[in-house]
Length: 90
Image (tube, rainbow, N blue to C red; front, side, top):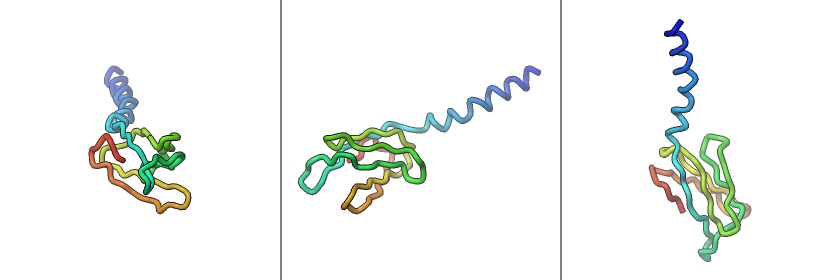
């Protein structure tokens, strides 16, 4: 019984291990004039995790270190940028 309980506890904690691999990525999205762009969509590629930039173009998102971020904005070309273990992606 004790082994079964231990296994059950480990099984319940296993999904949390995947979340531990995420890191906080921040940055600023700017236009050609170097001004921040508000309301740019920032998504972690292949997931439903996302956010939008604030009024100054700043964002923060938790993402795996080896993931890519997809930036999309009306009338701009969508760009995908690899995080490559960075904590700041401008």
